[in-house]
Amino acid sequence: MAAQGKKEHLYKILVIGDLGTGKTSIIKRYVHQFFSPHYRATIGVDFALKVLNWDNSTTIRLQLWDIAGQERFGNMTRVYYKEAVGAFVVFDVTRLSTFEAVQMWKADLDNKVLLPNGKAIPAVLLANKCDLASEGFLGNINQLDDYCREKGFHAWFETSAKENIGIEEAARSLVAKILENDETIDHPQPDGDGIRVGEEDGRAPKKTKCC
Amino acid sequence: MDPHQVTASLDVALNNPLSQSEESPWNRFFQDNDLRQLVSQDVVRTFPDNQFFRQDDVQQMMEDILFCYVKENPDLGYRQGMHELLAPILFVMNAEMRDVERDESLTPVLKVVMDPSFIEHDTYAIFTELMEMVEPWYSCTGLEADQVKARQQASLAQRKNMSRDPRTSRPFEDNSEFYGPSSAISRKLDVVHNILLKKADEVLYHHLKQLSIPAQTYGIRWIRLLFGREFPLPNVLEVWDALFADGPSLVDYMCVSMLMHIREVCESFTFNMFIDTLHYIQGVCSNLCM
Image (cartoon, rainbow over all chains, first blue to last red; front, side, top):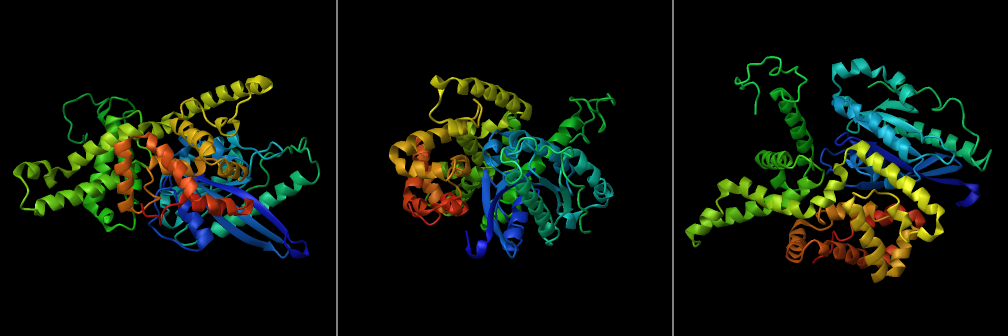
């Protein structure tokens, strides 16, 4: 604990989605403020740490787990998901198949990790490479609000690691939700039982900034 | 095969791009395109700092080799990491064939054997041999998702039964609970971490356990790429020489010795430095000369 009663949190956050959707690029942009088109394919899992000065009294350390796009097909994700409190699910707006995989990733997540109170961990959907977005896909992208409600995403954002769009906002949204969960889980009932709220997946998704 | 050119089958119900039939030549055409796209995504990001792999013809060759390998081994499919096993082979084949081409003192037989116009074929053959050895470490992920789920449920049920019975408590339950019976790489990592490392360096074993660092967080990459990212390319080739000479079990001992190599640094890490520890372990030997 730091001086003056400063609060520190350490959160494990997963970054998942099909291969080549830009998970590593998003993380590098978020953590190192940097973009390169030349990242190698992630094999297994990679890690990054982001320290956030959330407010004057709170420091947050985010442990970002960058999980290889093909790992969903294995049974290794259970090890990687353990004790995570939030997730980004990433798809590539230029490839429909990566969007179709989103619900598979979400299901995999919900099957293998839960918050201490038994609820799903908050997940934010990232529509990445929005700088390359094609007309056709953007036509559907406004339906993502409904999609997120249906699939239990906390929110969705259009992002571009290349142009630095939407990533900070998405992270703030996820961290805010995690902090909120933290308070409801930690304080009212240590047991965690019985806090099951009717509205399973929280608030209506926030609107994204436009691309 | 390009269905645009196929005229043999005149059954238009089958031979048209909208046909849903498995036998439609178009079906295969689209599947092959998807596969090429998948492979290509990794090929273009192979060794980004090495100019050799930035050449279009080299990338095309890699894509063709991987595509053919997957077509020949459909059960395994394309798994990420294969591209980085292929890359060093192609790199060496290219260098050696160019050398032979220039060297006038060599016998005509050797010139034929090392004919650069067959680099793709020869590389494919060697890559296929290498895959024979490492295939089990990739194939654990080749299961269909529902198959994996069924197995997990089975093992979950089994665990529940077992945990009620104190007589069957297992020594390695921390890791073993996570994977089903099919996962060869997990079993391998289990051996590395819970048996070999524990035996060789019990203090380090407990330290990693305390930091909640399971072997899967670093070992998957080490093993699938045969340490291809842990050493600079020239050293990778030396490591591979040893692995090929000695056989696959050397991989396990390599892992243990790499961990022990960094034990002092590892031990000084605390929980808050979890990420640093993992980075350090993952990148363990990048500056180490063999």
